[in-house]
Amino acid sequence: MARKTANDDLLAPVTLAVGQEDLLLDRAVQEVVAAAKAADADTDVRDLTPDQLQPGTLAELTSPSLFAERKVVVVRNAQDLSADTVKDVKAYLGSPAEEIMLVLLHAGGAKGKGLLDAARKAGAREVACPKMTKPADRLAFVRGEFRSFGRSATGEACQALCDAIGSDLRELASAVSQLVADVEGAIDEAVVGRYYTGRAEASSFTIADRAVEGRTAEALEALRWSLATGVAPVMITSALAQGVRAIGKLSSARGGRPADLARELGMPPWKIDRVRQQMRGWTPDGVAVALRAVAEADAGVKGGGDDPEYALEKAVVTVARAARSRGRA
Image (tube, rainbow, N blue to C red; front, side, top):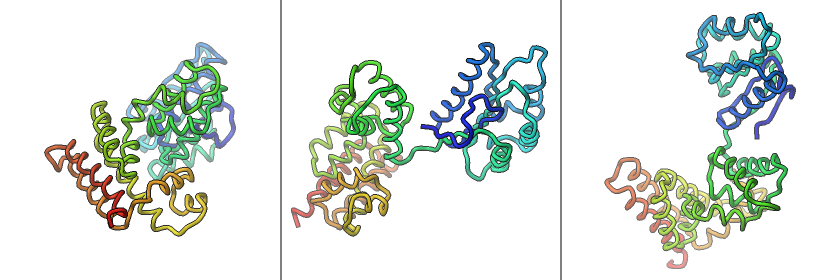
């Protein structure tokens, strides 16, 4: 969920939404627009890209109106504005117009940092919209989505939904919305399973989990279902690589509590427990063999081979065999 890092006045003269998570950026805009329209149903909304905001355009949009109409001016990808337009925006920040809300969407980072700093110095209301790359962040997002509807969901249900849907925040938000609309009472793992069983079985991470556990037949079944339902092959090789690397990282780490290992290895605690269960049959040589197989498959699905499906099947079988390498030693 987007985090507000300055004042919470949705009708502030300037709102700065910073980050690269599209869903959160869009929500930051929607919140301001909704507040403005609640105050004035006739609010005029202008949603602009950098090429539409030429030098002088902002002055035209924010000039006093005969009817003193309320207006929301949204500037997307503000880091890409031309130097002359940035000067216009900086000048406006020093003296924003009444009844006008300017919303700047900025990716953060070094590009366009001067405008970012100027908006902050001017006291803009700021909303953090960071890209959610960590599983723990997506899990927290799902929990927050359920809370925003005033509904409860078990931790296992939230995790199952993340496992089934993947990393796309829009799809996760849509799934939460569907469950809230369709299900009465508490939402548990069984409910999620009924709605998203096919999706979960087809997910790239399910394939990886089955493979690193040495469950060859189940991994291949999930792989074929996944390909049939349109999951991108590169997502599957990525999940396989993550699964094998996690085995290697944890097997070489010193013992400790899940929380301590999580900090050391950059994994959420729940994943430490899962990987510990998965790594029982692995050896260092098995990890090396599996990583080579995944790398070859990745090259195959990215154009280096004639049959991406065969490359994936070969990788899955090799990984699953490597998972049982200790027993064959």
